[in-house]
Length: 570
Image (cartoon, rainbow, N blue to C red):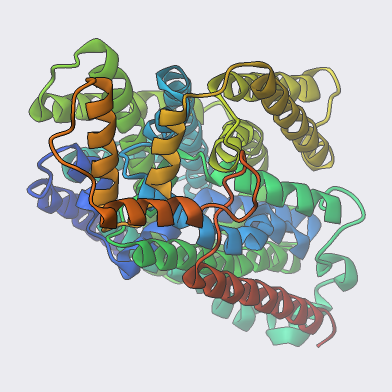
């Protein structure tokens, strides 16, 4: 049945029952929107790490990396390793998302730029959720199709995963998603490593691998003369940074942690784990070359075909469970982000502002169903996994320019934010339509063009138009630079503003302690002595963590280089 043995089916059914049970069990903990979207901000380092790993890792990534590595060799690893170089920066940024104290990234943009730009991001973010959900469903369904030799066709796999993930996600919200991320993370590690020992036995170890490779030097090169070049890696690293900060799930990932250290350690640890798992994905593509020869199978089927041919009975069902786990929870997370943007930033703000929490939770679950319909429909429009990944790389980062301008440059305003987004969007469309920059060769040119023009437009328009009010700017920068646990500083600021706006004497006088603390927070934000620059002075925790992350990056690069040399030359 479905190209699987009875044992395989038993493993698969057990997995589905466990996932749905977690959804029902978590439902009793969901009392309000913060529980539904942020899990009540109760997650420690361990769960935050697996949330980061799970939300950022899905089977379409494994399919895409294996597919590209099957085509070009080990250099296909850069389809996911481009984010390796930004790990130290994420250590610095994670705390910003936690200190923002908001439910969605749209709330963050409203705090900085106002309600008009919040609306733009809300619809942009919902579109991103649908796009990423569609890409994940497509890539994973391709893998399941190959695993079952067509027994579970593409359409059936997509619908099965979508319905199951939406069911448990709409019941238990982010609490169910994070606990499933824990199981998903374990299963994803199993999925990533499971093929290697079976392949190694079949091929006859290192000697057999090298004998089956007619051009080992080319296969195990880490950088190519064309397509995946040093310039490609450099531009994709910048692009990945611009993308990550505005992906809707990043706010829930880093912002749902219990403390700032939980956020930093958990967020970065999950990313380190993903970088480690990318190595066996790339090796799977290379192993497919050794086993089948280059160009004899479809690249998207490399991972699934090897699993089907190498794994004994029961392991195929385990692999399918791993694959489904890796996408279902991500679809669930994007569903929650989509639902939060619609309910919190559109429905409550503009349609029915008087809605109570019970009504908003109901609307959130209705929005979840709408997300499912849209993402499933989109998943049928892609041709292959690498092209699907390139599609997301050119659309998601368009909003990242506004994020970084607003985070570090006080003069940036809503007009510049709108201009940067629209200019970058037009530049991206021109790159693909007019200049015909396509595939991997054209990708870094496209990124350079839309990021460069978007940045220039944001800066120029911000200079030519009125700045945001000093009160709005003070509120924003005080918020993101006030540590968790010192909310009294923000409360006193709001009290002072309210009293001033009412033109009456305040009922209490700010204590010297509060004034001193606020002055200390404001002073700490100034690394450079320029009025409009808000680059913070790194704390000891920030510096130490940054250096540790940098060391991990160098260690992983060295390890990959040694691995490539060993596989090529022994």
